[in-house]
Image (cartoon, rainbow, N blue to C red):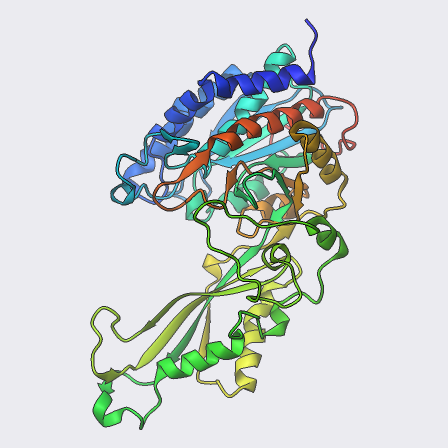
Length: 474
């Protein structure tokens, strides 16, 4: 029997068309493996032991489940299949934990731990983030192995963590302690959304997230608003004016040390012609908001974003007639690799002091922050994967230099030196982290084929030269 790329893609499509993939996803979603509720801690282990380990065992992987370096956090699975020292080695990644189910907030007839199909939408917690995405990749891998008579044609290591929704606690330490075990030529994995549902993406990293608080704390307690209002400083007014010096009325960041000096040519070229589309229900993008002179794609993928996540003054649920003693704003910056996060707070401190806001305290929150990462769009693995995906899709595939949100992409790039390629199978309107999370069926079917094409092409001549030699121990 002739082994062909078309045959592998046909097998991948058959997994969708027959209902076999949906049946597997139903089993994965049925395990309430949320990392955010202690009562479901055993379900993190059950997800691996009941579903993932048997699946990988059957595919001939050597599977190990490791304790998290940080106590009380979920385990980490590493599965390896080594077919030859001369072959390229690929590292995969996913996370089997989810956010809380939020059962009571889902629409009528929908439940977080059941897959419910309504039209093209497959509802269920983890369908998009991230059970559905890593399941697509493993199912496509299985289709290629079936077409090749049980072979992959390359070496594959798969890392599945169970604490991503708690900040990937312990993952950095685990990777640093197991660089030999995880050595690879390239990471090919799936998480996050496409920038527009109809357009396949190849994403090369993620923006960093940096958190801090602005605090104006003026006195021990509130004082009568009639007696003291207009006589003494109002912390909310001071904080509002301080914020107004940070960002303009149209969203332009005014702390210029927070923004790139320029967008790299390779990044600008990758984003040329990229149109953002959030899908049904997504907010409209006003043309005048944000940095002038940039396209919408450049604003979200190549620039810095500043957001006030929350503000607190007084008692919002029960306002009292008093001048409040303090006001607090929790702020977040999304930044690219072009910005050094160590300079964010010092730059803000200088900015506020120069404008007379020395009374505004800046409280750094490093525990909530995550570094940025970006594989160079000129990296040979990017061109190779892009060509493979366009061959499968039969249309344009958009290269995104980095996801607008966050992923642990920096750990693989910075610690392992591994180029990172992300192929998202979801979209911006999937409602991950909220009620009514879902996958779009057409993206599932196409995702199975896109990944099968990539896996198939890895076993053929023409890949970038292998550099890593897998080792059995860290």
